[in-house]
Length: 85
Image 1 (spheres, rainbow, N blue to C red):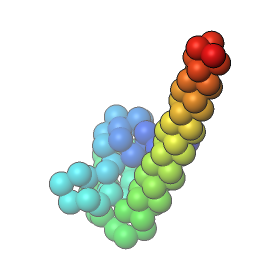
Image 2: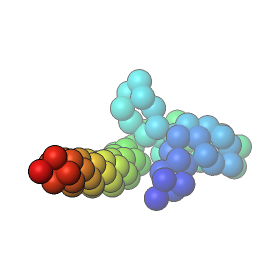
Image 3: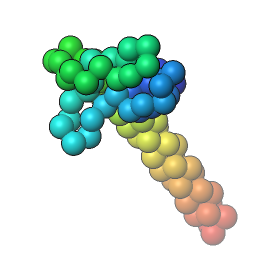
């Protein structure tokens, strides 16, 4: 997923960024030797859907790490309390 998304950010045969952070749009694609400078709705929607998918996965991974860390702290605290008794 990250490799496919990186195409928008310059990991393509022209090594050119397709997403335009100044306009929030996305160029329509690549031609043989240059970027198609049109910024249509379809390409922008594709970029935004891909970005939302990536962000969702990253957020889920972060939440699961937080849950794992919290569970580890709880278990560690229980172990310390049991040793104190």
